[in-house]
Image (cartoon, rainbow, N blue to C red):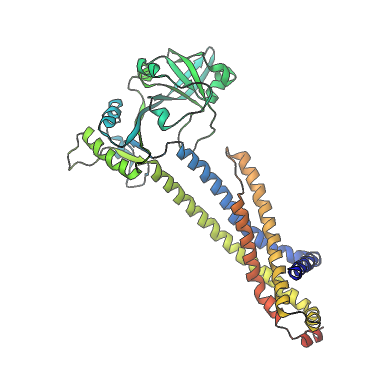
Length: 414
């Protein structure tokens, strides 16, 4: 152990001497490793951070949840939007019919969506997102509140003139979110009392905009907008022990009954699974990771040859020293280990430089984006493993050449 530590310290000393003596040659060689690490870890850090953010947003859609809609969310050329626009829209009554016939449902919500201007005194917010919700919405997509509460059962049943405000809307109308609770707002000439302010969530990549929304009980929302709202949907959540596939099969049969479709007619609705959506996102980001890894590997190969070149030159320059070491009893394995360690240390230095560039990138992206970009501990471990592997591959041939030298010939070479 003590001998190995001595060799490592000696290798460190010799490596830094190389850096001082051959600054340009070493810097050019390290650049290849640094750029390779930057590509691999930079892509992994950015993509993984984005994926985690989007997956968290997908989870907020509800676990074991299926969205019943006219449209198929998977898209593609074989699913043209005009085809789905011709389908009948979801109805409020459909939710009760489905719940009555289902054995696997925990909850089902009818959600209407539209846009409208909202105001308080002289302050007006243009085109705020409007959601008309039912009681089960809170079971499927739980909300957190910066102030106030959710709607009561009696407010739902009576279609009371109450609402929830998104955090940004509350700030824009009342200065602070807390001041909004209990105040009145105007929407299309109707008054609504704010009973709660939804906690700030930030930019959402998947379409929900709770920060800039107003949420109302469905019956009150219908009084204001009648049927003038865009593409209402049903959101079904299965019981805890029910699989998504089983829930989807049951819902398909029930929806065909509700729509009175004959066995020969195709579905005029789509069942969009949150689980399938999550898997599709994972597959998409995996492809991006592979592309980034390929670019990084190419750069690392270039860096590998650069490090190998340094090691060949180093072995040649130290031939007489190698001969002297072997003459006084140094084993071939010690010489091999010494040069391998030097190659690994060079690669780790290049990797550290690459990580520095990645860290700068994460700081820039975190400020530009509305979510943190970070280097995780597994990525640091990956970096170390890659650097050690590249160092061993780059140094193995020069190190073996040094280890196999004849001490007499090596000394005479000077």
